[in-house]
Amino acid sequence: MAVTRASMRSPLGRVFGLGSAKEGVEHWWKQRITAIALVPLVLWFVIAVIGLVGADRTALVAWMHNPMSAVFMILLIVASFWHAALGLQVVIEDYIHGEAMRLTVLIVMRLLCVLFVVRGILAVLKLALAG
Amino acid sequence: MISDPRPLSPHLQIYRWQLTSVLSILHRATGIALSVGAILLVCWIGAAADGPEPFAAFQHFMASWLGLLLLFGWSVALFYHLCNGIRHLWWDTGRGLELKSVYATGWTVVAATGVLTVVAWIAGLSQWGH
Image 1 (cartoon, rainbow over the protein chains, first blue to last red):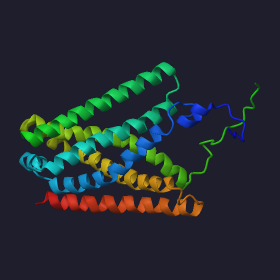
Image 2 (image 1 turned 90 degrees about the vertical axis):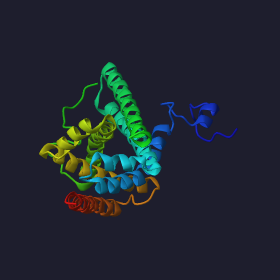
Image 3 (image 1 turned 180 degrees about the vertical axis):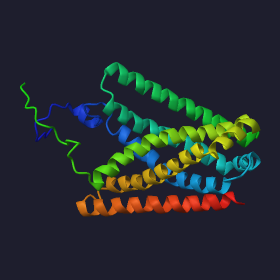
């Protein structure tokens, strides 16, 4: 094995490529994937919402009855909160220094994101399937 | 360790503001604002799913001055974060990292945010009349 530079890393650790934080590029990569997904989803949403300005609930229900609208809406909700959870995690880790407080805020933030995603998906499904 | 009580960099009171750092701070700030906006989105679709009365109450709030102000702030934050996010994705490919192009894309993002916000509100308000 030709190791040209002195390294404290084991060969197995180098293969895993997870680094000292044991997370590798997972966080960075997921943030990019959700960001790429959000570009078309946000553009679709803005155009759809402009079309719905001043519309009553009946028009909204009809819009959600369209399978594509419902699918895009669920994807938008999931991608938004996933992306937000990753971003807020970094903000919390940067500014909250006490270990106990940081962990508490991180957990509460994560759970709230899950709560809003579930609430959002159920609302879309109800509008799409029953109205 | 004996530390010299010199001011640490960046010493914010005397640090000169520049486009690059302002846009970076704004990206984070709008990201936090958009997290609140995402909750608003779920409240909207949730109110619609709950029935006509909760939906009417939500629409009544959104048509108020506070609601419209929230909506305007949300749209600015959304367009800024979208445009600057695309700038970040472009950087991720290893391109556009020279100081000159960082400033050029930075001002482009500022202009695009303004244009998109104005266009969206003109389209939205003209739709409101119909």
